[in-house]
Length: 227
Ligand code: ADP
Ligand code: MG
Image 1 (cartoon, rainbow, N blue to C red):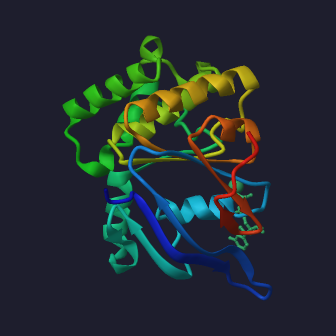
Image 2 (cartoon, protein in one colour):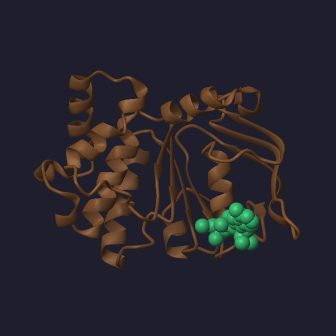
C-alpha cells in the first residue's frame, strides 16, 4: 500500500548568520492506519518535523511524498488545498475562537473546503459526538475544561475528513488524568483506521503508540523507545 508519509532524505536548515540544522537528512515511511509517536526533548526538531509533514514549511532539501504526491511539485495554492483536504492538526494550545460555540468552531474549519452549510453542521455534530462532546455542542469554549477544549480541537481537525492527523504535544497543557482521556480518544481514532502522528517529549505518551521514532538534535531514528 502507498505510504501516507514518505520522506526521502528530507532535511531542514533554518538560515541566518548561525544556521540551525533543525532536521538532518532522513528517510521515513509512515503507512495508512499507523499510530506513530515522534519523541524527543525540547529543541530536538519535533515541531520542525511536524511542520514539514504538515506542509506548513518546505524542507530545504530532499523529497516529501504525501500520499504519493511529491509536494515540491505543487504550487502554493495547491499545497494549501492538499493541506486542508488531507491533514488535520492538533496543537498543544487549543486555538479555539472564544466568541463562537463549540459547534461553530468545528464548522468554521470546513469553510475553505467548500463543504455546503448543512453538511458542515452534520459533520461538526458527528465529530463532536465521536470525541464525546455531544452534551456541549452549544457551549462557549471558555466554559469548557482543558480536556473538553482539546476534544473540540480534535473534532475540528477531523471534520475535514483528513487522511492524516498530526498532533504537536496534544497533552502538553493537560493534567495527567485528562491527558490519558485525550490519548484514549486518539486510540479510538487509530482503531477506526485513522493515521495518527503525535510528537511529544513524554515517554508516557510514546508508550501509547504502536511505533515510536526518536528524534535528537534533528536526527530521526527508529531505535526503540524504552518500554
Ligand atoms: P522542538 O519542537 O523539538 O522543541 P523545534 O523543531 O521547534 O524543536 O526546533 C528545533 C531547533 O530549531 C531548535 O534549535 C530551535 O531553536 C531551532 N528553530 C526552530 N524554529 C526556528 C526558526 N524559525 N529559526 C531558526 N531556528 C529555529
Ligand atoms: Mg515543539
